[in-house]
Amino acid sequence: MTGSTSSSPATTCSSPTSCSSSAAARLYDELQAAGAEVLFDDRNERPGVKFMDADLIGLPLRVTVGDKSLKKGGAELKRRNSNESVVVALSEVVGRVRIEIRDLQAEIATRVMEVPFKD
Image (cartoon, rainbow, N blue to C red; front, side, top):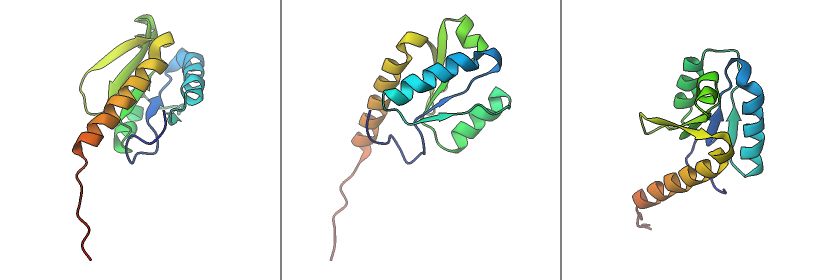
């Protein structure tokens, strides 16, 4: 996973909530090892504050490890340009993030226009 998906400083945000911080830390390490640019938001803030900040700095993909997602079997994955999120098994998150980043880069590539250079 090379290259930046956008001008944002990171691609994913792993936001631990309450007792899920050890699972989030493991996932953070796995994502970094896979080459993802990861912002680990472990501030003592409500999830909504963390989500808002992730949107404000322009993170295109958010991975949230929280008690609710863990009870559903994994981590929550949400693209910034979508209103929907999906819970992905922790063992599948890295692969799914790779797919999402690839898809986001492909979407950006389709919008790139050549601008003629004028002397």
